[in-house]
Length: 199
Image (cartoon, rainbow, N blue to C red; front, top):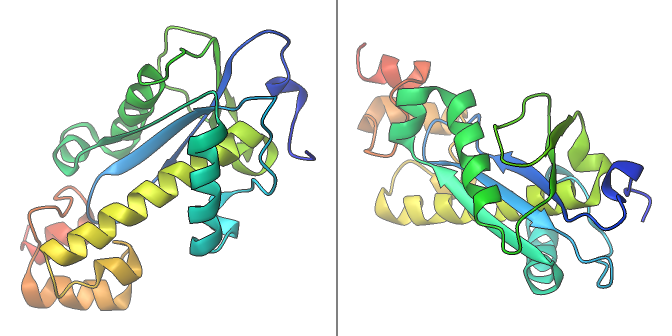
């Protein structure tokens, strides 16, 4: 694959890619995924999840879950985001995802420029979701899981349009927030939610 880099091709090591979804939305958890790909079961078409259609992400997610050597999805709740801040809650979700891998990772590559504290070597890769296949796979699993959370939230709290805008601060979401007030899953530490609460 063109995306594979030498960082991912370390002989004999189980290298996990890690990425997150849901840092920017006003509602719901931040979700992280960790994936160790199986070199013997390649998956064609891996790419940054933001560049794929929802249908393509779903199809690739099924292949990742079927063919990966190991994968795990974890999250940090809105309450944890409010208590820790979004950066530290994201790193916590990443720690949880890596801890869920079986077999465990021996090295971890994380999309972005910040790394969680892990029991194995870890490296940040800027733009990794478009450069490293395992990170691409993680970005797809995280995005699919986060979107599913938004569909569930839409059913639990109708009127906000979560299934459509996925919790991002769109005009539709902000109007619903002003009209209905925050739901229990809104992140109280985010400015638009604080404004809606009159804080």
